[in-house]
Image (cartoon, rainbow, N blue to C red):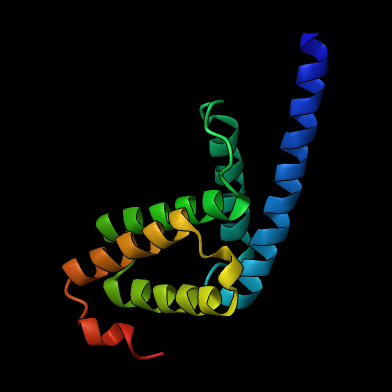
Length: 134
């Protein structure tokens, strides 16, 4: 019985990984601020987080996992001084343009991630007017 469940879970995990690679490629082609190495590392991080999730946590999409990890990494890099606020603002704008052009990806987790990112930028001194300029 457990073998059937494990095989089913392996198939689900393989489908998630395949969808994750497709989404990462789709996002990177349009946002254009992650190089191939960074994209690959992010995909590996996202997949690891996906595998380590609480089994009761179901229903989170590939996009949600991806944005949660990506924005978390960017916020951490900003806090460590690796990315300055102007670079992070350009990345935020590119990501926001992507989301405006692809409204199907605007779900609760993604919106929360973008809001947290924007709040940190504002806290770090980025003028609110900068978010209105494309």
